[in-house]
Length: 112
Length: 114
Image (cartoon, rainbow over all chains, first blue to last red; front, side, top):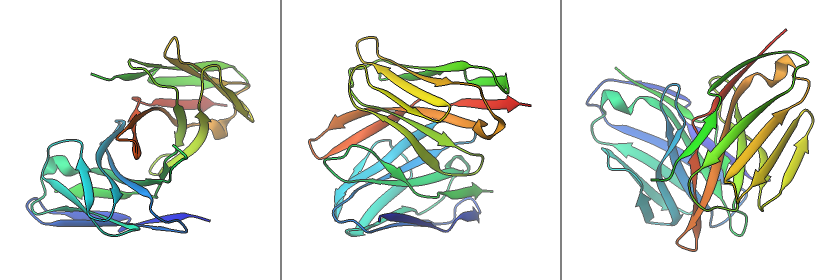
């Protein structure tokens, strides 16, 4: 069966510090991968998606970036965090032909 | 701009009562999903609706999809406290042939009172 992992689970970082969040999927090959952010009390916003190694598409302009160095690994990064980057970050995967996306446990980021 | 709107945003209901959450969306789509989120947790998939007229039921929850009206409903029957959570609908927008994009609704916070 497929599983998705995210770490760290919780992170508190000062403004201006770098960020690296990791997501890995097990039990499947060639997944589509997604990064979402959920601000407090809000819905989910798609940040990035990837259909393969090295292929990243960005949905919203921001100071975050994403990379996919391996088939089942998706990384979310920032060189300098802003207060507005605080939120709950969720990684998700899907595999064609199924349209459904499955979500990881999430990382709660607080920028102080 | 694509919009997915849920109402109500907050729902307080008594155990044993019935109620419906509505999800309206502004673009053509044949696929819609319902998720549940407990406080501080990730999203749990509840229903996958893949065609007009689709109806799915699980326990006290039933979801339906009317693609012509661009409307999905999540009906709660005889609510129990364990159903307290935030419920999201998400509209599936295929693009690029190789992936799809989910546009989430605003969420409905459901609080079931004893």
